[in-house]
Image 1 (tube, rainbow, N blue to C red):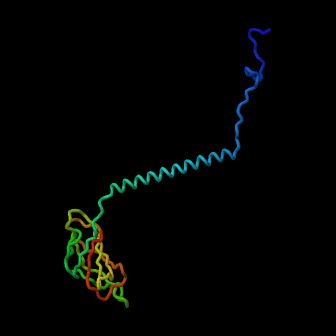
Image 2: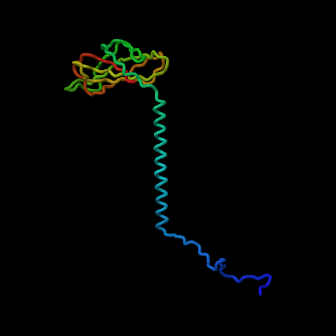
Image 3: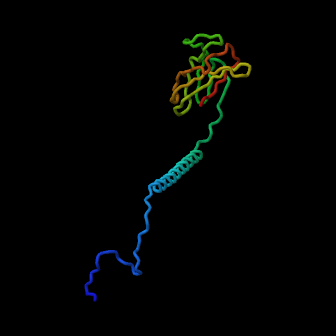
Length: 183
């Protein structure tokens, strides 16, 4: 019947029970593939956003923990025009004055003014920047302000500060001048 070396004829192989084994059907529906891609992209996008927000929150938290102690309130002192004073580690020489700006005319509401001749010396032991605010008061209320500033000043160095009004017009009269440390 059978020969020793029997070769089966080519064709489908039968399973032991006599049925053909069918592979599972694969769905290659393009809409399904696009939908799965969109869902995966959305999950990755949301995960990335949450990771970014978490990292940012951690950085903000460590920044608050490492923040230096709050700076003390602004130091203010009342001065007379032209007198010497010491404020914020700088000594201002006597002789400064409130003067009308040459480049601007006097208006109906008052003259344009600035402070001239304000020479300061750094009395500290490190280079510092400086900003003074000269506040003009009348009848216990704020009337005008002049801002004076200078770049970093070395210890022992004297410089003349640059001043400019923060309000374009100055009142004709005022009762007091208050100097405030701007930094």
